[in-house]
Image (cartoon, rainbow, N blue to C red; front, side, top):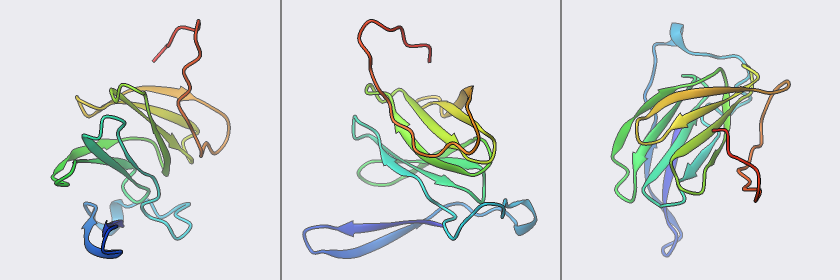
Length: 136
C-alpha cells in the first residue's frame, strides 16, 4: 500500500513510501485485485507525484523530488488510473467501482467535478483536440 523509490543509476530500491492507513473497518476491500495502490503518476511540470489508494478511496500527493507528503483527496471507490492536463492544474482519476472519473484541482487538492462514464472505468488519457473547448 504505497510505492518504492528507485535509484535508476544504481539500479536498486533506496526507500519506500507507505500511504496513510485507515482502520480496517473503514477500508474498502472490494475490487482490490491484489493491488491496494495501483495508479501512480508524476505531474507534467515535475512538481508533484500522485498515488491512488483503493483501500482508502483517495489519491495522495507528494512533492517532487523530495517526496514530502502534501495531502489527500477523497475520490470514488477503487481509484485506478490517473492522467493530468498538460498544464498540471487538473488530475483525472478513474474510479472503477463508482463509474465516474474525478476531476481534482491539483493546487487546491480537492475534487471539483465528477464525469459520469460507463461501467468500471480504468485506463484514461488526456487529449487536446484543436478547435474543441475544454469543459473541465
